[in-house]
Length: 117
Image 1: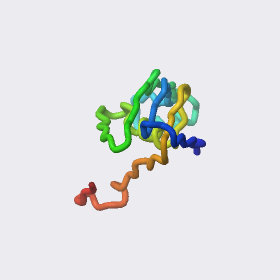
Image 2 (image 1 turned 60 degrees about the vertical axis):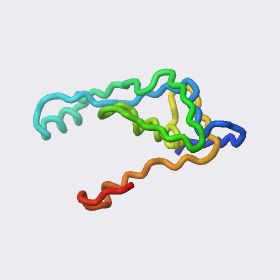
Image 3 (image 1 turned 135 degrees about the horizontal axis):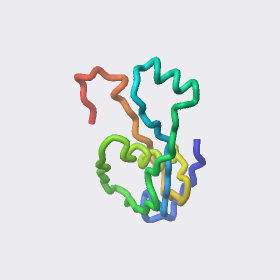
């Protein structure tokens, strides 16, 4: 878990200061599941570092609502994890005025016909 430094003198709730982050992504190769597992065991499955954010700067004020829009693997979850302090950026800093509660995925513990707000 990352060390979280809380800075109460900040005017903003969260400040992203030139944050860069790269995450490993697997390249998909054709083949059935067994063949893919054998490739992974043999070391043929390659993982490359893909940039998620490059020099991201943003400021979120207290009480401000922010919408994170994007397709699959676009960095929404990484943005929230950086804000909460559960993910450390490769470079730059994330300043927090107080504690940020990370998003909780409750879809795994509920029946699919239920919704949450």
